[in-house]
Amino acid sequence: MGDVVSADIVFQNAVVAAGNGDSYSAHFANALVLEVTGTSASRTIKFEEQGISGAWYACMGVKRSDLSFASETTGTDELWEFDLRGRLAFRARISAVAGGNVTVKGRAIVSNG
Image (cartoon, rainbow, N blue to C red; front, side):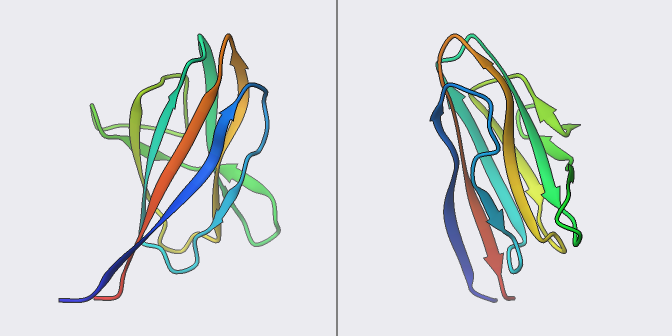
């Protein structure tokens, strides 16, 4: 059985305005579990991966509560899972937020076995 290593990432931390946030270089990660929390009355979070050109593209994830697929969410208090194999970088871009803040944190999983 191989070793499993994880890295915690803060993509957005109590943000109150739209913005790209921080990205994660996913070169060696296999998976990412993402948590969306906050106090905002409404929000839109777009899940994106970076292409070789440097451009950002929509990235599908699975919402753990109902196993639905989407490249964005307007929800809160959610867990999402992403397959990072072969991806260069990942971000959770806030395209809209109103009436409070949004936090998006994740844990990347690297398994070498």
